[in-house]
Image 1 (spheres, rainbow, N blue to C red):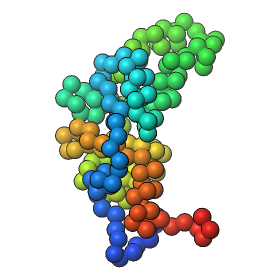
Image 2 (cartoon, helix red, strand yellow):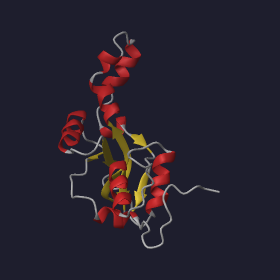
Image 3 (spheres, rainbow, N blue to C red):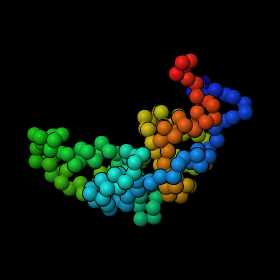
Image 4 (tube, rainbow, N blue to C red):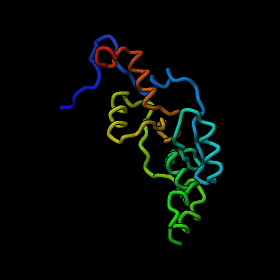
Length: 165
């Protein structure tokens, strides 16, 4: 039996991810094509003030992967991370030129129609702090973060916080 992480108050229940997105301030979603260069990925991430993930899309604008800030740091500062790297490792980093080379395939994501509580459980299970929100065809329509979840549940007065918090 799953334990609920929120109060089961009758009058206020979390809705769908679409409902949550309606409460999120409009922001730039960090999206790149599979063929973007590392320089373009850095620029895209810099333009997004809320995210530490870049969402990678194919030619039909469907989500195909993600690139984390950590991935970019390891790529950009490779020699600082591995100063004694052998030739094979160095060669591997030099051929990583596009988003498709660097991305994690099979990203965790939410669909607009998903229930908020199910997505929260998925985020906790996969230890992700943010994820893309897609429509059924896989096209990104937004993203959500754990901060968005906290704000949403607080607005619904559904957070269980210890007294004095």
